[in-house]
Length: 336
Image (tube, rainbow, N blue to C red; front, side):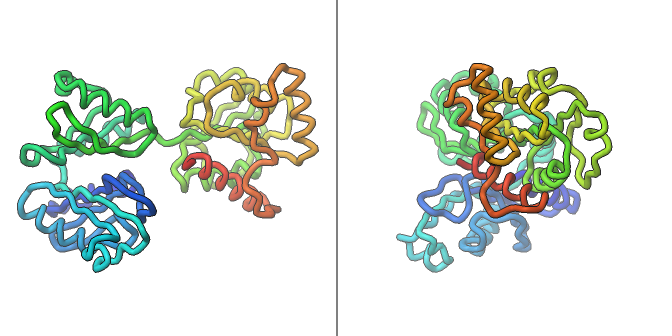
């Protein structure tokens, strides 16, 4: 949904009535993941996607009904249904799509504020029970849910699972879709070099927030970059890494080629909960790194967390190709 925010604003500015369709449940090999969103105007214009083209026409028709009635609806598609074959969902999976009239302006403003805060939040939309009510935007379990401990627990479990969204139930049997938004994953790049510059371009393309850390002023400030990082820190990694969460939404890539820098970063990253740790260097270079880390007291299991030589093997030779292999490994780790 974040990728269509600019379109939402354009439609609001033009005062065009429109609906929002979101994937709320999938089975097997569905075309798009839970949380995928599409906007549909009263004229049938589409922005975004809920299936990559398989069921869009049927969803557009359903959206016209929602815009006219002002009431939400859920549409189910699966290969066992004649309608599913008719609309083209032949990939072997099934999908449920929630279509709602778009939110009131104040709710959209709240959505943008939560995005700017870079903190986790969720949208709670009723699927069953009383007639349509506007989705609830929250960054915590606010007072209006205090009397519904079952719903609170289910939402908390969905948050903890790492999923983008989940169907949750309340104590009275009402069903809701909890659409979960998390901050961009954080990519920490230790060392500013040519490959760092190429990685920054890909990291921006794939929605990572980026931090470059390098105590070497010349490398940090004078390396040519087409894409600047969100933060550039000219300091030793051991001095600043503790300022970051170093949690499962964090990814680290070691690029400086200098053991005095790289090893100090690894000393803090290996015991942490970061999702991915990759280190540039040949097999020979990494073997030396392993011996140094063992001398610091790290176990084989801890050292095995390091992806080295870094990236997915695509026969990379140029900095751009190496950056592509590293980004492929990052995305694989993120989606695993």
